[in-house]
Image 1: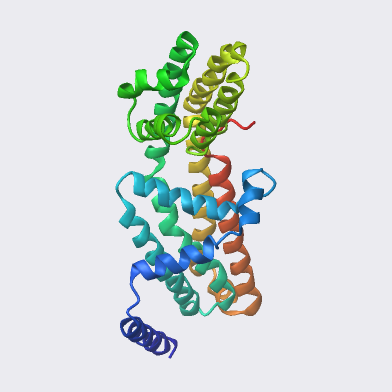
Image 2: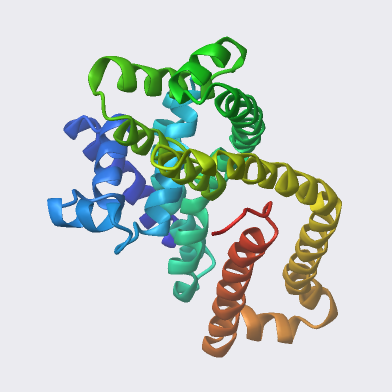
Length: 308
């Protein structure tokens, strides 16, 4: 009977979508309004001063969106948003089919995150490329700046050796400093906001300080050296972190595999777990623990980053 209800719901939903003309673009725009609500001038000022931080989920979603757009895959973000809504509904359906309503919020959250996790995995190479190109760019620009004592000239001198998207970022800096405003410090502040990396921002802050005290130029190269240190440490930890992730997913598979194993060993235990109220609550708690620990595992096994 539940299947007929679900089929009816799907048909009604399809009719509503067709009548209202709902498209993936509409879903994406509405989702972005919910995830990243419009900020007041006061909120923007507090964020700029560091007194207020953007929500982590907002930063992650915006990072995925910007990375896909830069790599020429902007349409994939729209597809991911639409797929997220579909997967959310699919998670609810699965919980209803299992006749366990306690699993609905867990499955809905887990399934809705899958498209974004897949998109995030596809831009991992982009993030790695950004860091490698940033290390090269800062190194050669810093060397030229120490020699010439002219940051705009140093960037112009090496702009042809930079690769996208770092090249476009520094080209924008040259345009700001030479055509838009004569305030070099403000141009560097604008440059600072282009990349979300603590070492890069520390380099920009030191560069601003160098405009008042030229003797600080010698502190720029050690800052750039931190990028190299972080890259070396991440290369050393890569295999170790991969083993940790592998062991975690093996443990999750063992926990999930216990459910069909119970059916083979003792059908009464299986029915108690699947069809009684305490059993359904236990399953919901296990699913919630797996979801939370999976997110924590991905958080603590990602490549390390320097924090000021």
